[in-house]
Image (cartoon, rainbow, N blue to C red):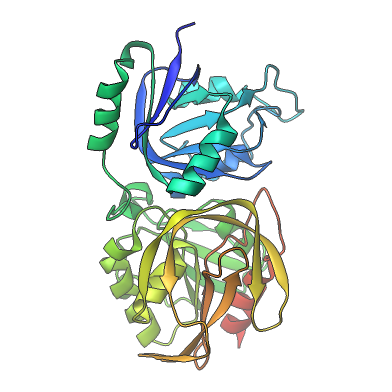
Length: 368
């Protein structure tokens, strides 16, 4: 079998075997530290235009099934694994992971050096990359130049590319308690499901939804989802959220939604050196001191003062959660208004579930 090459924009090259579709792909090279949940990772819209390397050594052991996807398609631009499973073994499996990647047209590579790749990214930071196999192979110098001509993640406006085009409704499970307007910036299927389990009828709206369109639903609360790209480009979503806050509606945001909330409060955002991606990130709730092990997928963060409350156009606010690995902002909360957000993923379909209480808090502020 002809080789496959993973080429980084700084000229580092990893040789391996084709895995999944054969051809070429470009994206931001990132790594995910989760040992479970690879199907949820692949179908998370927040990974749009990223090549994901899995740090766990064995990937594909349980195959794929029709229950675990977080959206209707694979969103990763490319996939890097160390040792693909030779046999898929699980009672729910409907196909092997490699067949699934081929069907979805996802170009991947199996390389022995995923540890070296991860260490390289931790030292140099996330960067552009390309995976090449089959007829796409060419001299390395040419491949490096093609990678360097590919678009960067900084300044990328991607939410509208992954969002639903038409509104839809996820009905409440059991008795309906609340109506939630959820702006889809790259929403994962489990998020409205977690709210539906708590009696919320969730109206999912496109990323382009305006404040007027959101408020026309007369929702009990408003939710802004996770999503890909640079939050500095999302001026429309920021304007919509400011209209929601001005109307006094309870608000909850996750991941990209946290960054949009920060911008709506007048804060800035910045790109992390290599981001947080995996299911093992320690986050501290500064209100209680409790540490949650949490699921993450973000390459940008909010700039906010950590030393106490600060003023915003909507009253006082504070940083509610921080990452214990690097001290970055993991949550924001208004003190005089029912609005809060977190940078991580409390819906965490593959786990952990330490942060699921946040959905209960959202219901509490809607019912107050």
